Length: 364
Image (spheres, rainbow, N blue to C red):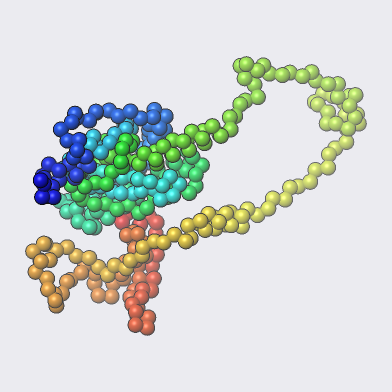
């Protein structure tokens, strides 16, 4: 009788998401069936965003980034894990509204380090919390371009995603959807001529709902036809004798008999600026009640592990900020302003002294 302990084989099976009762069976198929319409809808949608995603990453990293792909196929947990390196960086970015459900990006450690090095202008970077935060910001930019394309393709203006969260983990512990799901595989050149792979995975209900919404929006789109087509000959009418028609505008060469000039008045156009402002105010009002994380950063520093382990009560940590220098104000880990520390009653506060320009936010 078993003592209740799991064998190593059962532990490995649980980590890889395989049912231990099925161990010893045949290997999974390398190709899984899926809806051709669903695959094509995702492929066409993501292909349209390739150029914009490459441009966004190029702006952030300061180098030329090229997206090749994607190759969209249906897969499952076992097949995906078989393609991944042992240690990966997974970025969970589930859709919260519009098409709610699972959405995750997976890349190798090498790719994550390359991106973080370009963003931080530093070689031999370590995938610490700050570097992973940078990876999350990059994925946030990619999702932004996808949501824009999705909104245009489906006419759904409520699409939103949770804040991406990047983790550096063994591949066996990645949270992947159950059953069969679509996978988009990109080959990305980060400016050094090396092709690195990025996996984008959708939950099965997410991709199915997206495909249905795209198909529905396509059917409802109005079809514009020209007045004259190959199957419809142009209709030609004979010119009437304008001399027998009273009170109408004569054609050139016809007499002016009985013609009365029309009463022409200038058109007064309303001022459009107030209407545009009201429209913008109405659009921004849709997200006014969305919570965002705001943090104030006094400063940063880098320490060796042995220095961190030697810390104790009374240890003084020197930061990279000078005394009196403005502190950084971040929203969702993105620098938006600078300020000075103040005291309000018994609490600390920050007085905003400078708003960071959009161009500076992108370059951060």
